[in-house]
Structures are given as structure tokens and as C-alpha cells.
Length: 266
Ligand SMILES: NC(=O)c1ccc[n+]([C@@H]2O[C@H](COP(=O)([O-])OP(=O)(O)OC[C@H]3O[C@@H](n4cnc5c(N)ncnc54)[C@H](OP(=O)(O)O)[C@@H]3O)[C@@H](O)[C@H]2O)c1
Picture 1: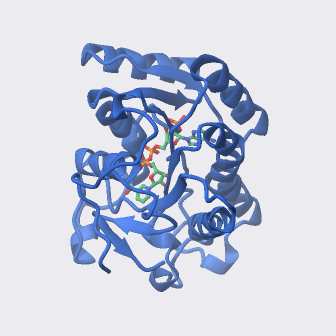
Picture 2: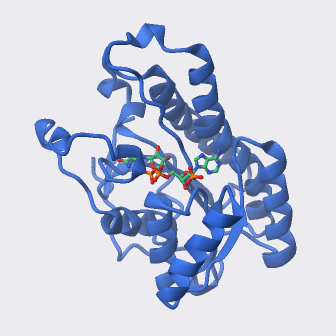
């Protein structure tokens, strides 16, 4: 694959990079919090989200200690009402949204003795409702705001388990289906944009972070990545990759899946 992400890529933003308004979902901890920190350190206007006031306040306080001022709002992506309230707030307060990082997500462990086929349908539906429908709800709510300014960069955080080639008989169907479906949504929305005249300056790409030791992986044995020929990736390197994908790309980087700065097959 020839398309590598670099910091030198010319961006085509409709304003100075520091004026970009960025929304990063699920950002009170983990990869989302690392992204909020990195984006704010680059001087961008960042809106972070949490599901409770306590988590929002805690994130704000930790960032203030670093000298960073981030606007934290409540968001539960499983609720259409919550997503719409946030869209109204951003439109009223900022009049624009340039960057959307669809990061919020959940993983529900399957007991090792349970066959993938026996995974509980209610679990599959609830993971799908958060990971996939939540991402779609945010795209439906925020793309209209991006269209008003004819500029938008959307990064959907997916997973190796969303790639058909990586699926195995042990894969939890709940998580795999939820992430592969985000790949499907990405392709369809990009194709829809490309069929418009004029083509809007809005891109949607997917990025899979690899193994990162967040809460999602606290119970994963430390040697799992190395047994697969991989390694644990740091929060900083993933946050930097998300930033490059969101803020340093032209509209030619569109409808693609990236990992570690390189384009991958779906
Ligand atoms: N860590 C990895 O190795 C890895 C690998 C591949 C993909 N990913 C993906 O990376 C993304 C971030 O995961 P992470 O590793 O940083 O995990 P994490 O530490 O568990 O963070 C997940 C974030 O999403 C939020 N969230 C969960 N459900 C939500 C909802 N309904 N509405 C809004 N926010 C919600 C969580 O909020 P609460 O604190 O309230 O729960 C938390 O802030 C996820 O999409 C995950 O699938 C991670």
C-alpha cells in the first residue's frame, strides 16, 4: 500500500489549523483522553466527552494541571437524544465542527469456554448499538454542521477484529461485527460524498490503533501481542496518528483504513 501518513502532508482546512473545532468522543480515559491531550497541546479547540459529570470534571481537572483548557460535555452515543443535544450545543457555541473522532466504544468479553456462535444476542445488540450505531448517530448529527462550512475530517476508530481477514472462530461476534460494520458505513458515506456535485470537502477514514493497554485491555495477559508478533502501542503514538489523520490530510485521503501510519486492506 502506498498511502502513508506523514506530518508533512498538506492540509486543506478552510481555516488555520489552530481554529479547528474538534470533537473526540469517549475521552475521559484511554485513547480518547490521550487524543484530547495531544490535540489540545497542538492548540486546537477541543471538545471532549464523558458519560457522567464526575468523569468529565476529573478529565478537565487532569488537563488543567497540564495547562490545557478543554470543553467537556456529556455524551452517551447509545442515545440519539444525547447526541442531538451535543450537536445543538456545538452549533450554538462554535457554529462549526471541523474534526470528529468517533472513538467511544465498548468491548464485552466472551467467556473462553463459550463458543462464538453461542454469544448472547442481547450482548451483540448492545455492543452494536454503542460501537456502530453510536458512530453512525454521530455522523448523522455532525455531518450537516460540517457541510455548512464545507469542511470536515472524520476518523472512526475501529479494530483489527473488524477486518474479515483477521476473524477466527474465537472472535467475539459482538465486537467483530460492530467494528466491521463501521468499515461498511465509512465506505458507503464516502461513496455517497463522491457521487455529489460538487464533492464536499469532508473525508471519513478508519484507524485501528492496535494493542493499547487501556481499561479495555487491563485483563489481557502482557505477552499476548508478542505471541502474535505485535507489541503494545503507547497512547502517545496512537494519539499522534489520530491527529495526523484528522488534521494533516488532504481530501484525497478518504474512505481508507489506516494502522501505524500505513494504509491497509479492509
Ligand atoms: N485499547 C485497544 O487496544 C484498542 C484496540 C482496538 C480498538 N480500540 C478502540 O479504541 C477506542 C477507545 O478504546 P480504549 O482502548 O481507549 O478503551 P477505554 O479506556 O475503555 O475507553 C472507552 C471510552 O469510550 C467511552 N464510552 C463507552 N461507552 C460509551 C457510550 N455509550 N457513549 C459515550 N462514550 C462511551 C468510555 O466511557 P466510560 O469511562 O464512561 O466507560 C471511555 O471513555 C474504542 O472504540 C475501542 O474499540 C482499542
